[in-house]
Length: 98
Image 1: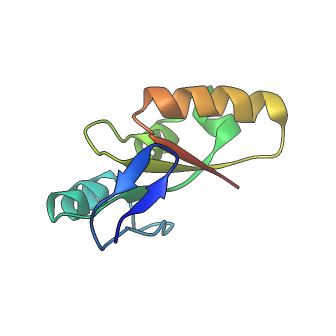
Image 2 (image 1 turned 90 degrees about the vertical axis):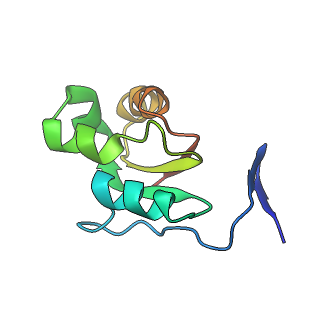
């Protein structure tokens, strides 16, 4: 069975769930290397991402991981919009808005 999200097909049977304090970049890379169909970031605060906070930038990193979903949190449109742009630049194929 193949699950499709827009134009992205998830061909495997395992999807990494977002887990705060667990799904850091090293863990996402390890799970992807083991064949996960998709990996998901820890929750990323949109305003802090836009402000360039170092630890938040690491949470958002997904280059080389595909498909990669970034979980973006926020409530103000200007931070969310710019955060979504930065998420895409960081490698996100999918943005999960919280």
